Image 1 (cartoon, rainbow, N blue to C red):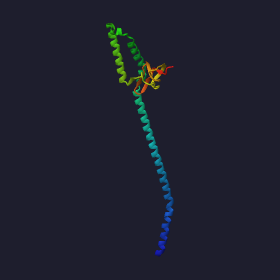
Image 2 (cartoon, one colour):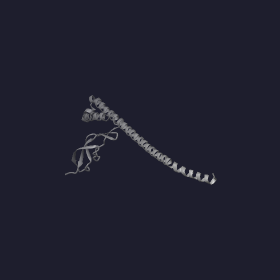
Image 3 (cartoon, rainbow, N blue to C red):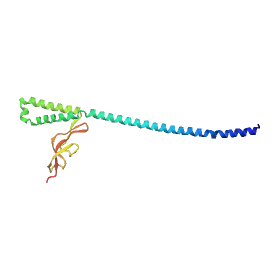
Image 4 (cartoon, rainbow, N blue to C red):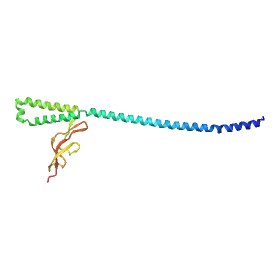
Amino acid sequence: MSEDTQNIENTQVVDQLPEEETPVADGNAERIAALEAELATAKQDILYAHADTQNVRRRLEKELADTRAYAATSFARDILSVADNLSRALAAIPADLREDEKFKGLVVGLEATGRELESVFGRNGIAKIESVGQPLDPNKHQAMMEVPSADAEPGTILIEMQAGYMIKDRLLRPAMVSVAKKPD
């Protein structure tokens, strides 16, 4: 064969090869694109699952911290009545009996018990709400009655009938109060 004829045949063969390989190359490219899309979806799903796991962990840690912080809430509510009764007992003792030698030991003991109870409350994050002279806050106070007053601004607490308490940043029991109103 002549050289020109052989070059023409080689050119035809070379021209034919890419045409035959094109469907295979397109199939591989499509497969690669599909696999890359699946990989991207799988990566996105893993990121979502990881974020969801972190959110669940944070929520459970917060719930656990709240449970620890406020575990004594129901016990604290129950013991508040003891504190109230002790305060009433101390307030009911007349001044002349406080000085009497027969009752002095009892009074000193009751006062020491009251101080210890306040100390225990403090160690457990239980604090008394200051009410008298403050404006009425429905989140901390329960208005039991209104009293006409020319001296105080309307809505100001004049009398505390029962002390209110907070446990850390939550209301344990609202203070029952009497609130000033404009005189008639």
